[in-house]
Length: 552
Image (cartoon, rainbow, N blue to C red):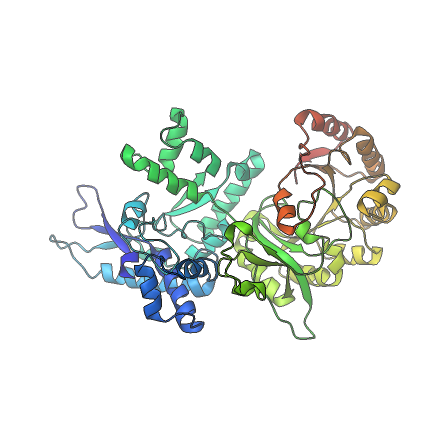
């Protein structure tokens, strides 16, 4: 275990000979390993300590080794996801490391100072560290950046990473720190993307962290730009900025692999929550932190499960049914059978339950984890789905609680519910993002199961109540991508004097979900609309006096 916390000396300027420094590398591996060891050996008692040690010495090459490794990786929480139990292990380890380093003096009498900073040393040092209880193979790189989570384990996204790092006493690291945060280029596109980055940095300073490095490149680009591929000097400079320009060419391939692995921001859902009979309960299928497209500022989006409509282009088909159902991710499956009766027994996470029940108090705890980001960015919480109005009573109570806390709220809805439910919900939120789809009532009913007269009546009632309302129109080939439908939308909106409309071009991001769910995907092979197809509809809205936002 001690090998996980590898140290390297940090060269200083010539005049700083009395202040030598040491850099601690691999704190994420060590804390993840300790937490997994505690869970596997002591809490669950699935293995003895000696059995785990033998598995690690064999680099997981035992009859049950891959199942054990899969469980270590997938079934125990990891540092970097804003989970106190793991993060506080990291905090304790950091204090111990700093206290130990500061006990030593160099030959000139200068005190050693601790740091946690690595640009590239985690790769060669990892090469001499054996297999670890976080599921890492012998010889694989350690966690990069000093304070960064292990690659691929920051499943809650960048806001959770900052919150985890903030629980460590960064002031102890007088010899410097480094945190790597990963973004894909699309995250930061346009002025809105840059504004969100500025908001993120505002929270970074509010949390009193020291040093952050951003990796803004996608994995596909880096894979194409590995040494040996023809590339421009500009792209190689980007790679050097992520890796380190002083490394020799023979090491660049491994560094590129490290950089590729950094480009990873996934979503994760909270655990199940049991309620007493009196507690409000919702059924959700995801909580997405650091959302950039569902309202102003940095937001958390809560996705409610269940929808009465049948939109064939839906990007979240797992939201349609209100039931909790089980799926199997074929690529992760080890075919070990125990999970057939209990998805929680699946060591690799291949067997997954989609949808979970959560109480109001438990959901608030999850939401409030990113309160600092809402405050610094003017962001907040967005309720989405599925269709939020299918759980209108719970959603209204949640909005009331958030408003009492001074947190901005928004609701995404198609407005197809009783007017009493719609108005009660709207009374407690700051913005409603209202989706208008097929305007023809017969077509909307036949193709989407939408009660269009009720939808339009609810929209009108919201305007009359003075609700902050933003109409949105998905641009779907064969359904809503037409000047005729756009003309009907604009004619309906004309009396209301609204200032802004969002146009949401169709995309194929949800296709893989249909395969996972074993469902037919009616839009398979349908191309997203081109700029030339979108431009006339955008021009129509602009000529009608609207500020047009492409995307939402």
